[in-house]
Length: 285
Ligand SMILES: Nc1nc2c(ncn2[C@@H]2O[C@H](COP(=O)(O)OP(=O)(O)OP(=O)(O)O)[C@@H](O)[C@H]2O)c(=O)[nH]1
Ligand SMILES: [Mg+2]
Image 1 (cartoon, rainbow, N blue to C red):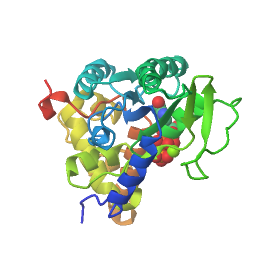
Image 2: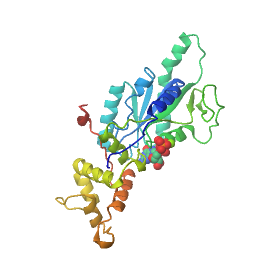
Image 3: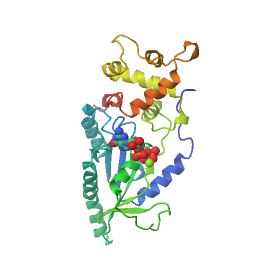
Image 4: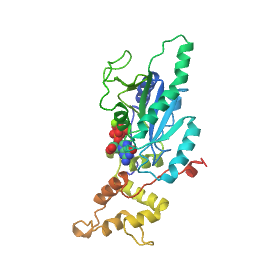
């Protein structure tokens, strides 16, 4: 069975829990994967918390195709009526950029508090996003080493704490993981490529074969060069295994090992910097 199975059940419960957390914050920081900006975006964030300002981070831009970063950022920004910034773990400037954007987004929220006669307090924010997009890395970078944790506040479970980023901003120290429905196999596959789906949920040979065929369609020259294939030679798990002399007893190509290598090389950006979602496939341009 090659279908990708993920997050069976519990979706309604997880959504409810996420909504409760979202209710506590003034500004949401949503992290998506720049290689699959459309597929790694939670389509119902705005339904869970209508009118709450969101800052969207298109992360892992160091391993995505730079020709698509700006195009996607613009589309996602317009579609969600939200500010989008292109980030990566290695770019130190992201942190101050994220902080100043959160502060700018919170201005209106604080003004509304004032109008309602409520006290002005630090802006509360939290990081949400699908698995493996870089939520924890983002939190760690924002919090840094020197920041001390503030005590747990009412309405928040004990495991969750607010961390002071500066005197104007507080961050929930745990991210919101987003439950995803399993109705779109194309999206599920792309999330599996970037390791956003538990490995028990899929067959790695099937997923790696699909990845090869998508890369062959979108980046034929780059992948043939990487695997040292002639232009007209068909690229598949089996031909790559043979080329790499990954052969089992009885002369059978070791497609399982090859699949795992291809998936991890892709995920680390070793094969190349690729963007797999294309606006034209979603009717966006
Ligand atoms: N190349 C690259 N890798 C990144 C970037 N940000 C995070 N990573 C890597 O991606 C992996 C996942 O990062 P995390 O920060 O743990 O992601 P997460 O969203 O907290 O993941 P879960 O807790 O599993 O949902 C780690 O190996 C990080 O080092 C980035 O901008 N570029
Ligand atoms: Mg994490």
